[in-house]
Image (cartoon, rainbow, N blue to C red; front, side):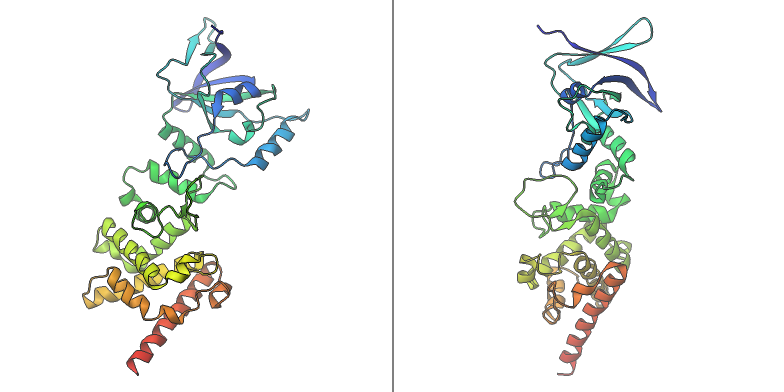
Length: 342
């Protein structure tokens, strides 16, 4: 039987959590650890996809004579097989003992790009290792460390918040509804929102979770639907609206690259039009369901050029969203005027 791997450490606390502090060769830490990248299809993991260029840049840097780095952040995942143990020594130090065939027992909480291309380098690196955090606790630590990190997908942070929330529907109804659009089988947005992870699904991600939840938030504020309806009712209303969009504009929906329906301007503007229609239905005492949305949209959407080369192409930013909303509202008014005046 092969002897265990032994790493000398100090044991202490990082705020309220017990941690190990130590040094080990980069190739050994690579061998013992893994990144927990979000798999959008399985709903597991929490980290962004691996960035080859970022990792290669760090490899080139750390090989330089004057290089250094802050400690890698790891977590010893709980093991029912006893793959690792911590041995207290008389002088106050500890030893982390790891079975020779344990495999990858440490999660790379904050170091996947630093370790990603160091599998063959014995360069000594410092590390701080949490002891037995759950996956949920790891996600929380990762979110706090990286919430302001440059380049970290905002949709991934939204996904973290959704997983960590005690009551997402109450705390963040707009995020709850956006995720419902991405998860419900009857939704035209099913698995089509980019959560910031990786996916093997054949469906192309055509919008981000962050964009959708912001657009839904605009709808909730403009319509004030939550003053009289539950979050589940509001989610059903938003779902009915997008189902109506697909029913009325199937050609435009089927070709997202050449039409604005699923691009930022289109999503934000259409959600405000949804609020307009909801308010009108409420004032008339009518149910605002898929039929109501379909009827309202069918009256005017044919007079709007939704192509990426049309009038909506030039709108950008918040000012562009407002202009796009007014452009669509004007088209709706003109259609109504024609109907009233024959």
